[in-house]
Image (cartoon, rainbow, N blue to C red; front, side, top):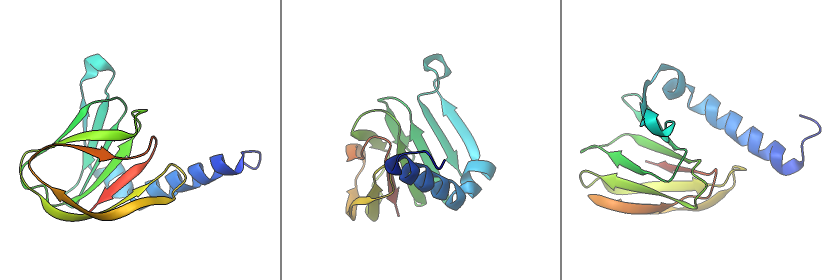
Length: 130
């Protein structure tokens, strides 16, 4: 690790911290891999309080009605955004977007209405909602 370039070190540090902070959902949550015929382009893990979704390809993330938990979206798709389809209005929710080195690049309030929305998340970045 001491030979890694600084940017790589920051990325590893950020994702290890993210893993530690979310180990409850990653280790003890209900794991839901989708589309095995496509090499699982989307995987979700969820607990009562948190939903974490990782998109490994350009696919649509579907959210059930009444999703009131904290939502964590990891963009491993190689695209600068993820597509989300909300089954119902989730209302105004605070959010923060991080790049792959853990630097906050955007924050504010999202109005999560029913239907399809493009969520701007940098490649290898994370959006935290709620």
